[in-house]
Each structure stands twice: as C-alpha cells, then as structure tokens.
Image (tube, rainbow, N blue to C red):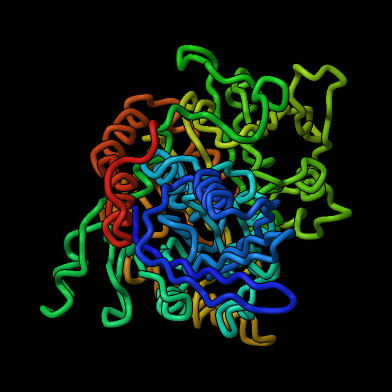
Length: 513
C-alpha cells in the first residue's frame, strides 16, 4: 500500500471548523474498501451521513449531506496504472497489440479499477478504416480512440471522449511514428516504452526500448545502452495462444477448420482489407482460382475475410459494375451466395462456377494451418503466415500503380496528381535492382524463402507457380522447414510486459492467466 495525503474540512452554515490534516494513511487496493474505510471513519467521528463519491483525476470528493462534511483524498486511485498503447494499422493490431494486451491482463490482472488499458490509433497508409472496431473487439482493452481524432490528442492532449488520466501510467509504442510516445508521454507525465522492430530513434526522449534484434541495441550510443532490452519478435506470438478467435462461432459464420493435408488441396487467398488492395487482389485471385481449378478440379479455395469487412463489400470488388479495373486482372466476375442454413459458409461463385468459401472467424489460424498453400498480397499477413510456417506466394501486382500503398515521404509523393505513377515505377524499379524483399519471412532471413512476384503480373503466371508447388510437395515442405527456422522464438510479449512492470514499479504477477 502506498502512502497518500488526506485533507478533511467540515463546516456549517454559521461557522467553519479548522481543517484536520491526516498524512501517510495506508489504503488498500480495492476502491470499495477505501470508501468503506472513509465512511466508517466519518461514523466513528460522530457524523451520521450518506456518502456519495465522484472520482476525478487528482481527488475523490465524498459529500456528507447532514453535516456538510467534505473529505478530499489528495492523489489518484492508489496503486492504479493507466496503460496507453499507441498503434496504427491492422497488421500491428493483429501481430503486436493483441499478444501484448493479452499478456498485460495475464500478468497484471483483470481488475479494471487497478489496471486500465487504452489504445489511441494514429493514421496509417495501410489502414482499412476498421482498426478501431478491431481494437474494440479485444476484451482486454477498456478504451479506444480512432485515428481520425489522433492529431488533436497529439497536439493538445484532447481525446474525442474527454478521457481522464490517472497519476501513474506508461505509454507503449506498438506502431506509428516513434516520435509520438515522446510527446504524449511528456504531456501525461508517463514513462515511455517503444517496441522497435528494425530501428530505435529518439534515444534521449524515450525511457526504454524493447527491441526485436540485438543489432538494434548495438547501434545505440554508450550513454543510451542501458535503455535497450532484447525481447524478440512479437510476431512469433501469432497462433501460440491456441488459435481462439474473436469473430464469433467459426462453424456458424465460416468454413469449418480441422481438415487434414491428406484430403484434397486447400488453398487460401488473402487479398487484403484495404480497398486499394481489394480492387486488385479480389479479381486477380478469382482468375488464379479458375486456372488452378482446371488443372486440379478437386481443389478447395477459401478467403479468410478480414475482421469487420462486410461480405457484401468484399463481393463488390468481384463485380465489374463496381470495380472497373476487373477487366485488366483476368476479367473474372463472381457473385456472393449466402446459404439460408447458418451451418453453411457463404461463398463467392465465379462466372465459370468455381466456389471460393468465405471464412469469417478471426483470427483464422486454425484454418490457415490446414492449407497447403496461401496466395497473399504484401503486408503483415506475410508475417503471420511465416510465424505459422505456412507456404505462400506473395504478390505485388502493379497494373494499377495508384492503388499501391507506400509509407512515409514516398507515400506522400505518390498522392500528388501527375507524378504518382512515375514515382512508384522508379521506387519499384530501384527496389528490384537492390534485390529488396517485400515479404516478412524474406526480410527476416535476407533470402528468398518464399516466392515474391512483383510487377505487371498475369493470373496464368501465378497459377503456373502454384501448380508447380502443389505438384511437388517436397518444395512445400522445404518452404515450411525454412519458415520454422527463421521465425523468432516465442516469449516476446512476456518479456515486454515485464519491462512495463519494471517501469511503473509494479511487483509480482497480478493475474492468474
């Protein structure tokens, strides 16, 4: 129990009693017990009254009606911790935020009066617009602010919901710009912890860095070396928690998992969640499915639908009336079929009758681990598939260059009319000349573990590669083995939360798991 200060004043309408100062009273962690103590104290002092409580940031005011007694408890909730997480895109939410908030609750407990977790999202070029909805679906999180309201919070500290903040807290960076926690932590008076995957910046402004690789720490200046702790790769936590989803009943809302690789081949398509990716990815993958179906008519196809993406929205990208670039990407249309039987998954049916099931449970790890092969766009999904050791083909079609999302300064240039196509062409020409990789497993290994196809791609080109892999299972097994070798060890979330406890001065494990 922490010491705190109690200032008590009692007065009547005709006179005022001098304040009594009581200092260093020990209070329990339970809000109910604190209020009970104060109420009993007032009764023992000869005052019979009703107690009403209103918590503020720096004081709790208890109103004593009969004797007009006011008790001011100076300070905030005793032992309470405010945890503010800064993040941005769908990939960061799925692979960084989710395992961290689960581990926070496991180690610090589920008492929301003692540990409060808030998340503030910042703008991201890869955002789907549903990030806030995804974050709210995580039961460990108490408060969520969407990216639309980020800059008023960064500049003036104003949240859309007029949030209050407790005295003790920490800002955890899990996506965005590393400059953000430096500013926000300073304003709130909170410690700051940055998870750095490739590079750590603002060493003098940040309290501590949890880094993925030792090389990041070795690049730090000697005076900042003590701020670095190697925790490992958070993405390696993917699928280690049993694969439970948060998107509802998988059997009622999507394809049933639990298949065997001895059955007919199962291929998953991951076209993305952002409209710019779906506009290219959906029709392109429909055309690939038809070509594979011709050679392997026994094959099954599935799309694990991104969280909060309505099926009707997904289906519109397979309709040439809503997606004008469909004719440039195989010219295959499809219609959405929803069965009246709730046990049957919805599916897309192509113009030539090929069926692609829609799996709506999220995360879809139980299903993905049954797939012989995944065909995916670039992004955090390649990291998730790599962590699960699932063979994949990674696509970056640039038939429509204005639909290719880029980060940072280059992303700003691509939004300028007239020069966007030229800038993207130059950037991707340079990237390929430098043998730069786009898929996360290849970046981890600095080698081509999974095939990447970039440029003006044809469905036939991708289908031929997929068929070659399906016809040679040894190639798929070799890819699985190499993915297992390069993926990080699990435990990064545990180590990161231990750092959180150290920074806020929180001892032992508060949860039971």
